[in-house]
Picture 1 (cartoon, one colour):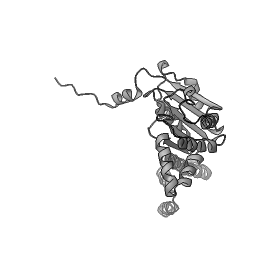
Picture 2 (cartoon, helix red, strand yellow):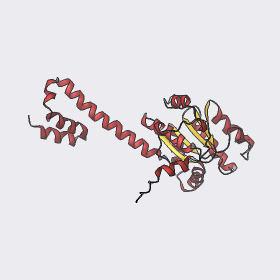
Picture 3 (cartoon, one colour):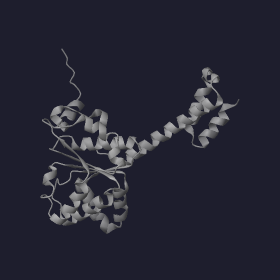
Picture 4 (cartoon, one colour):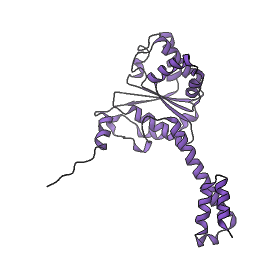
Length: 254
């Protein structure tokens, strides 16, 4: 059998993984013991695996996660206040399927952004579309987009992704316009999509930190209701720990 024409046709049909698997099979004598159906199934499996991997990489690229984080690399030391069973439960993504929120609070350097990105990365791996946004920057972009014709497109990206990270809520004061935009986002996502919010302030302080109490009521009603709450603690800044790990040890010479 002439295999090269078949391989070329598979590549022409953009079935490159199947073409490589077929070429490998032809170099493996033990494959002759398998039935046609079994060998063909292996080819299809290889192509499907590559397609799944490509889709996952596209989701991760679109998510624009601030940090390269994963659930597997989380630090579960007791001093951090992170409950392993809660995190492992969240990693199953039932909160995504149920369109629930996760509210992550803690001091600067406690690892809030890392934790949020780890949850988002797991969601990407499991097939969900995700988007990371620092809230102060997002609100600036929305304000500009209202005047340059990008508003509808930007809001569609923010409201339609299956998992949205809003990082650094209330790191700076929110104007009434900011609160209205935030309400628009959480209203569109409420009971339809899943949202992760991080903040240095404890949840009980969010209302008083917002200028307009009426808008604050509406925002918090949609964020806090049916939300999972994670409060992180850290004696030592996680940023400092990661920086120390990244430093190469000095070479000792005699």
